[in-house]
Length: 256
Image (cartoon, rainbow, N blue to C red; front, side):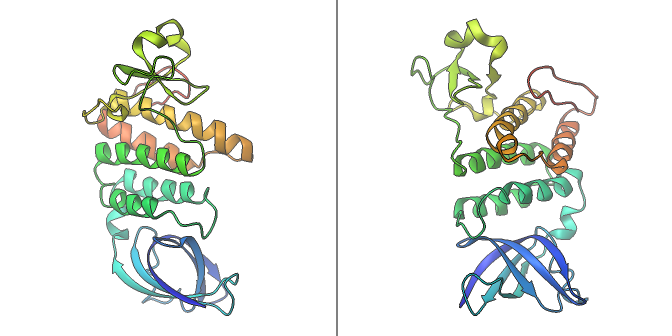
């Protein structure tokens, strides 16, 4: 068995004295593990860092085996990802999100999104907005996608400002007014009408929105906790947009 694919390093685990087990996200074969012999050598260590883009050749006797990777570097961005807090936490948080998906299950659109986000993690505003969209895409692939295109009550596609915590569907201002205190806010940059860049307020609301549904549909049913890297990323992204410490009230409140 053999295949070759473009991949992004997600993590590395020691195996024996000189080898490592590498976890990658491939474009056509999803998240995949493989053994890299001499992976702890001086030549390979800089290559096998989270966030780096590589070309991998996987070989095994049978498809269900762990197999071995031969790895060739393409884009070594790991050093740059160590320069800002949003990048350090972001690459870890996205790796944790991808681990929620079944191993070897193709998600080419998530791979493409991951590559784009990795090149923008140094910019907190861009990174925060892209990360939220990545979380929404993962929720969708897990079968819990949100419907933010039209009002759940009236079908209108304008003035959508809320999201129902029960249905995960958008709600217009007028329809949601009687239950406003129970609704989640729909950030303007996620609305189909919105063409505004994310700011502190809207990004805070977006993190609360995705965090709420990840907890309800994914973490709680599986009996797991949200990774600390997500909290670190959220704090770093919001702090860069508003250095003054503050806390926003509401469900899944976010502080920065």
